[in-house]
Length: 282
Image (cartoon, rainbow, N blue to C red; front, side, top):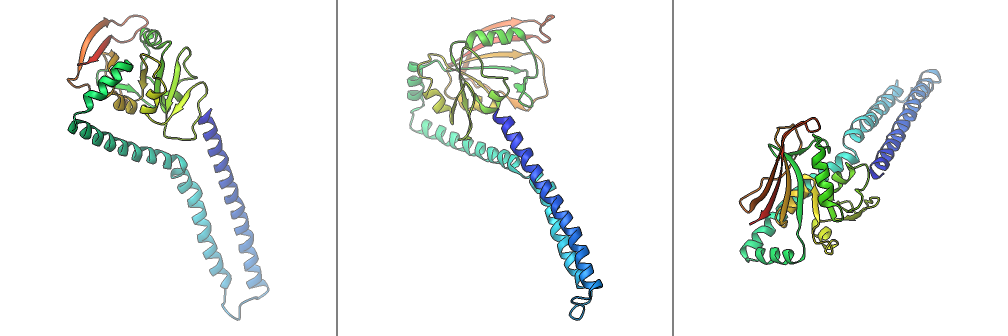
């Protein structure tokens, strides 16, 4: 609903811009004709500057050209959507720098272990994901494969629990997933989501799910990266095939140990071989 509202508002704004440009064009044509009649037909101003109306028309035409560029280039390609995308990129870079700095501080003061053990006493924070051979997880905010057994496993594991996700992941669903507490992370303070709780950081999401012994973090790529340093378990479906993608699951380091694996082969309902793998932090 939020996405549809934004599209509607953008279309309404573009219609108003084009309408103003159309009126400006009509006014320019009528104005140019009027100026020519005043100068050539009635002789007004010829004793001061001959053909002064041409100078006015050229200046007006230049202003009209600026209006055209503003409507069809500036506002179309550098409008609110462009601004939002680049703001998100800058904020993402900032978040990475902050996370890196926080990691250095925790390491320097030797408090990472204390934070982890505190979280372990409260919750089993679990990342659940499906990733291909090169850690591909999606393209254009959509899954790039369909494995019915993986979807069944996801439903079985997450039902009755909180599922924490980014805004784009939530909007990729037709509606909030049933029998689960849907928690959506977004930087947009005005964002609303039907049948879901909206928060503005991963820390806030975990704070409101403390009563759940095992909240699941379900994506997307940036949320997985943030969660990797605080999660205790990873339930990963590895799809044994390379794909073209624009979103990736982060690489796992030596702090993660494989504790279980189930190999599955392709069949009439599954186009690719895949494995269910469980990791726990060492």
